[in-house]
Length: 211
Image 1 (tube, rainbow, N blue to C red):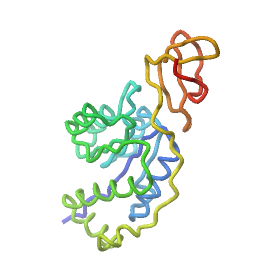
Image 2: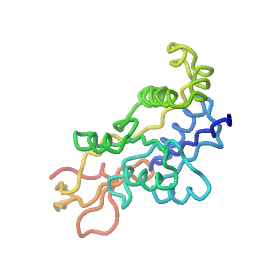
Image 3: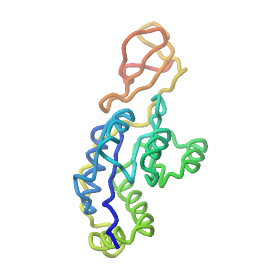
């Protein structure tokens, strides 16, 4: 019997620190660097499919992108039908939970999360996946051994993550002596910025006050 192909992981998140943390965490579980790819946008992830076929997708929800996290998974599955989905999101309410469940997500983890939270959530997802892949079960046993040993797997430094966005589209804010309306909230290189209605450019969220 031929050995199953190695698992490929794709991490898609706008924060480079989250990409790096997830990569190091996967490598600490014994997965080769060549089997882990990271990128910042759904469009970049789709471009990778020509040379990289992920069986496990860890992605931000990307609610403001033309292709959100769930849609990204759906498009990947057209080429890689067995690709599993895991989601990271600042918004985790009943609607998001229902959508994630309908999409078959292995987990939906609320941002900002701590290093141990991602570590535990990912480990549990891998343990469930090991029930489908005996080769993965053997790997995890070698790396983690007993449940007690699993908690001793080296944890890389956790990047500083922005807090839950304090503003949402439609909120009124004060800019100097004027009152403006938030059009879009964006995470740019780890910083929360907003675009105001009928205004050009982006403004750091910490420079605004609710009206």
